[in-house]
Length: 385
Picture 1 (cartoon, rainbow, N blue to C red):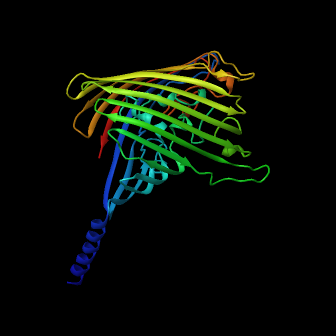
Picture 2: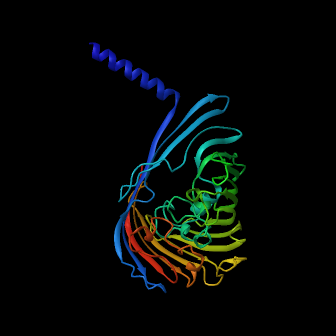
Picture 3: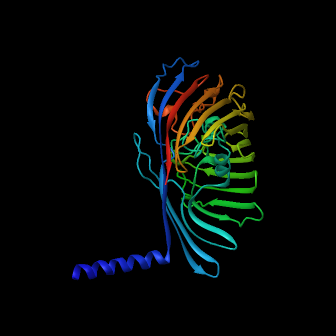
């Protein structure tokens, strides 16, 4: 009898808790089997071909809302990578925040996706945007690798989630919406020989109404560091600026997407600039089957690069895929990606371009440099819950 009373009491407490806050558990399980090839370039390095299992893009999250009255809501989200391939595990690197929402929009505190990253991902043709070796993050925003985060990925600063951030998202006015994210300089240190000051912001304006989606973003990040482990850029005193303009038109059974990206670095990188542009599209060949394809070109570096080479410092990315939906939540996918480095990408000490997700260079013995061509075929499955 006592056990039954205790069980009823616990059930009552649980019901009361869930009555106050609506909590949803969600996520994606995404895995593929990859065949990766890196063709030797001018360096003469013996790059091995290999295969692997990739679980990029797999994640699990918890989000909830509590109605505070008068149109005001408390909102939260905890989201973690849930990679189950080699070296995988849970972490807190994905969007996790607490905030308020109402007629004024949303105010968020935590780790956030900025408008620049969101636009690049929205215009990528691959499912999820962050689970394919053909992702446009391979060439966007990184000045060929001169600007890069400390996370070990090949994604640029503009395509990396923003930590230590406060963000605002406006209400939608007939499809027009503004957003802003600021990254605070919490780790600032003024001691000589150990100076650190990292901060930045990301602004976006999007129009999404009917078949038309257009986005415009501007991001700025600064790093003034004297500790090598804290350097976000190749130089220790940099200001990086990223401008993006892109859009998509949905015909119903097909989409066309374009993206223009311009990155500039001031400071010890001597005002280096680079333009990247891309075009992509999807086509529904059946009710459940879709062909995807995109082409991105990173043009040569320009500006005052000093002794560094400007010519032949770009790359080309080709991606072609097929996605077949078994249900609304489960998909089979197959894809091919080809990334070609120009002949002088290593002149700048950046090691060249590699896949934006799960780079080939993470495999022992694979060197990415001058004229190196990285290609891969992957097939797998994606399930959302």
